[in-house]
Image (tube, rainbow, N blue to C red):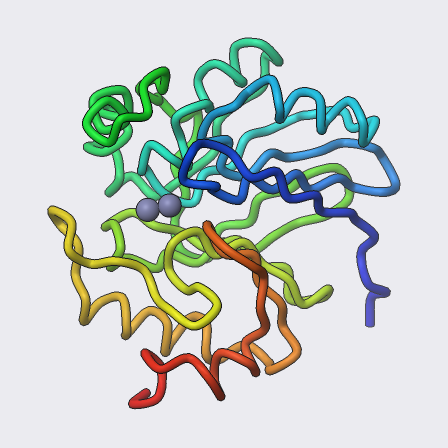
Length: 217
Ligand SMILES: [Zn+2]
Ligand SMILES: [Zn+2]
């Protein structure tokens, strides 16, 4: 068996929607990935500096502006690639700026990822690797980043503490969301922790027990 990978995760809430941008730093190499830099790029840059992290990649869970709005600017400033989400969110990434304007959060930019992700892919940073699970429903191209060894993941807007992702958007699919949660998330162990796109982190066990939206599954 391999020993647990050593890494540190810092959460930086960004945009007026307080979206949880996560910085994942490999302890062995100092290399870091930035998951969902939705905006407030200067805040993210200063968090990277404080962590003494060497940013190497941007990972996106899905194409909504509060998760992807700062990606193009950050990628340009740091000269690093944008990885993810699944190609089925291309239509959203093509209208990030317009989405932001619509919700009164201007300044976001449209995103062209350097690499699309598929179910079963792996993303690496330094010596660590996260598994990718395609989990559509909130958006068609939503992905989860899962580190089974350390029992932690970034779940974007699929599952929250006490709630689940909204499915009242264009091309959302409530049944697909529930199926994805059942197949990709509830199969993880109870002590697995996750960072949602908004609000406090939680565990699979706590959500299995208390989340009202999961009780029928
Ligand atoms: Zn979203
Ligand atoms: Zn969100």
